[in-house]
Length: 341
Image (cartoon, rainbow, N blue to C red; front, side, top):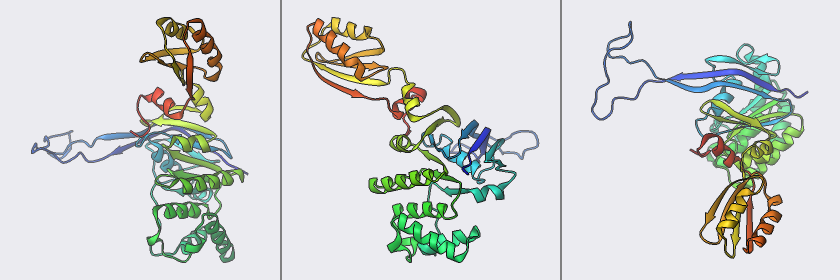
């Protein structure tokens, strides 16, 4: 039976030492009562600022946002690696920080950077992981062989991983996380640095795992990946959830999300005013004497009206290019900055 996960008002505040005084300026002395002379209070860095999420059993759920948005910290809390400052998190019926042993049996985790043991072969890494979870020798050997085949690593099974490429290490990390057949799989930036062929293979494996009834939560700042894999998305920035919906629902929520790039033999002020008056058109921008960019709530259904308007104003429509709503546009709409900032 598939299980889900949820969080309630997660907050995580990190404290780190202030940077050493630069430019020859000494750090100011003094501080709060009771502090040693010359010591400054440590700054507080808010990584999570009240994150509440609910991931349904058997769902592929994505956390989308730029680097430093709080995605990896959220995964860290849910996988028992980061203790929250406040708030709660559950895997199924188990409270993450009260029932850690039970939670760990249910989850598989692929960190953002591979953390493989370079003194072991690929096969040993998988079989040792299976042993941690109590699999019999026969079962772990069979599972290891099947996963190595699935991830196209059979020919490297008995080689030390120190000689593996980054993509091979990432594939082996995911195979290791699947070794004990977890109910919930966490993937932190799973396709970062992968070539297109390996990325497509990974996506196929994730879909197949999900179709077996498993819940998958992944973090990404790759819009294509989020759109291709996730049934629902939460957009996160500065430790807060900005929006949650299906990819199509999120894209459809942007006012003027369609961009129609029009080219005329010529255009007139009357044509531009007419375009602005069409239903669903949010903005019209003239591009030299022959082009116009139309931002609208709809795309293809506007073309007959645009063609009719062009005909009545004496303009000839010669080319149309429609850009559909994108997650990149959505993120810019909500935050005003790029996903890769």
